Length: 441
Image (cartoon, rainbow, N blue to C red):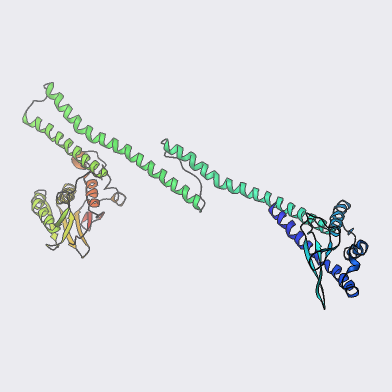
């Protein structure tokens, strides 16, 4: 519609300029009369001569148009021609029917020798004077309307297809999100485009996979904790019932069995408590700059003799300088090192070897704890830091431990901005590598 209005206005201005240009024919006739009568007295109120001059410039309405347009065009041309006035240099009326409220424009009439001799006053046309012009514009507007309707229909079809292509994945996302919120973690969106929507759908599927894995881990976590706590409780209950029934004597040996099971249960509960505090960020750390060399030496003093008692050879190669420091909590770092060496002593077959090596460079401290067989399969290396995960398939706590030690170790390392990694040891067993940033004061 705006284009049609603009086209009509522009074409009307163009045709109007052509119409106004015809005033030159009238001007030529007035100049000719001026050559005969310089005062133009013969033109004052001489409507007959004025009419002939006007008709000389504007012919009858063209018939090259449908009859229904000819009448309107003729009327507009008649009104335009009838409104023409001839005025002198001072714009005083010479001849013509002046309309008091009309807005006149003035076309100069100049003679070669005398210059300005008069003006032709006209009212700018508001419609086409030639029916052929009106017919041409009508045809163009009709063609433009047809093209516009066609473009609108094509655009509508494209918009419908595009909106469907955009909205369908969004609807699927909305429905899937509701299912995900309701706990249906197996929901997935089958949309494989490479655009932003496809990326959003892939991210949603990854979120669903993560939530599903977390839910599975949570259920496994609850089941494992229940199992870990049920075993010692069952033994304690059986011992107490046997003593109550008189089947077993209430002596130091049987009470010692009860104490061992309660101690095992207490260790598990303490490990769970520390791990939960670490997850919540509530595990306390009193950090200060401390020499890592002394921590390694302390391990040497505590564990070399214990390893020998199990027919294991523990070697500690402390290559750290005495002033190599780490910014950390001494108690937590000792807990970390003790857990790693305890695990190595606990799981290494006898006779066997355990090797601890500590090195440093300008940026980091590296500690390696490795042992001889048995080793850990490749598929289980990445899982050993998961809570309650144990390499043994047996659920026997005497051989499998609580499965929380390495999880606690990982949290302690990360709290000190370090890294921990498990790999195969050249000795045939497991290799744990710790990396910490060096503290520089």
